[in-house]
Amino acid sequence: MGHDESARGSSEISPSANTVAPDPDPDQVESGGDRLGVHVVWELLLLVGAVGVAYLLWRENPETLRGDGLRSLLVDGAVLGLLALAAGLSLRTSAVNLAIGPAAVAAALHMAEQGDRGAAAALGPAIAAAVLGGLLLAFVVTVLHVPAWAASLAAGAALVGYIERRSEPVLPQGSYDPTSDALYLFAGFAALTVLGGLFGALPPIRRLIGRFRPVTDPARRQGALGPVVAGGALVASSVLAVLAGSLLGTPAAGPVAVGSGLDWTVLAVGTALLAGTSAFGRRGGILGTLLAVSLVTLVRTDLQASGLTASRWAVGAVALGVGLVVTRMIEAYGGARDDREAVDDSPDPDEQLHAEWSTRRPEPFTDWAATLPPPPAERPTNQWDLPDWGTGRHWDPSRR
Image 1: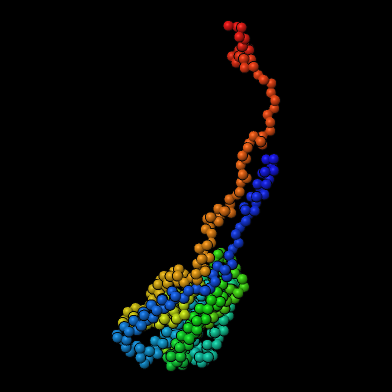
Image 2: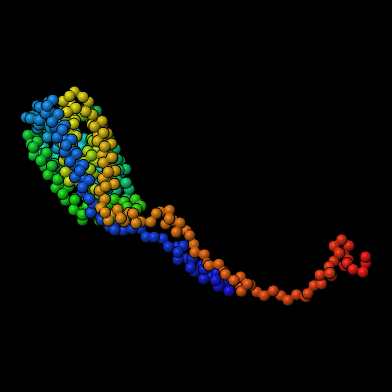
């Protein structure tokens, strides 16, 4: 009977001991319907900051906001805007591209050396190389499923090797002057970023571009659609970086210095984070990139006009530091209400692990007498008929 109870107890133990809760579906955990209120508040602060810096710049150096100074300012804004747009696009898909800075410098050097053939003739091979390089980077990130920051950093190192083949700054050989089209260049960047922000605010699109964002195990593959979107973003960001670099390789920008270009990466990623794009992916605002680019460009111009050092490393480090704080704010207050409830209702990992390892034991027996076999019959023993332990003889009461 005890054996039967033990067997039944073991049969009850097995299902609960071997049951493991399935991983949640990314579509169910994060719906993509984020709240945009936190982005609106932050973008209002960016607008106030940009207007304030522009007012100070107008009072101290009004010539920078009119005539040739304004056209040069717009070109600088377009260059930083294209790079920030490239960084923000790759960040939104959780596949950050750290090679955008070296790609821009490499494109600037190529444009400076081949510009005498014409802007279109020099730009065509650069864009083709950006597409091929972006496809290779997308293949490594999505097919091999490795971190995008590591793969893009390796790609950036390869581009730095190409850049350092020159030992001295390169004087541009072309004749195209981007300041003549400064307004159109900046307006084109502004249209791209605003339309992209409006398009990305739609919940289905937001959920689509965020499918590559890990929600449980970073090594877990999340279907085929997420890698396709992330790969497309890597290709597009590479093309945008080359377009930005082509503006740096024109005579109006002066000689192209030989450098790694990582300072441009830091500045672009910092500006994208400052705009309200989450470092974890998916979440971002509508006007944030336009306002952040305007603010950073005005700050750098004001520092240069005042005779102060406006290093891209320093400005990028400040923007990156503030942007990380903004990311924490966006992640804390920008999630959808149903996403928050899904996280709050999820079991505690320690409790879930304890439940998986705990076993159900059989109930204790209440009547042990009913389960024990009856004792064997024994002959009654005379209490006086006991051995004498000292002599080995029985004690005789007549001997006294």
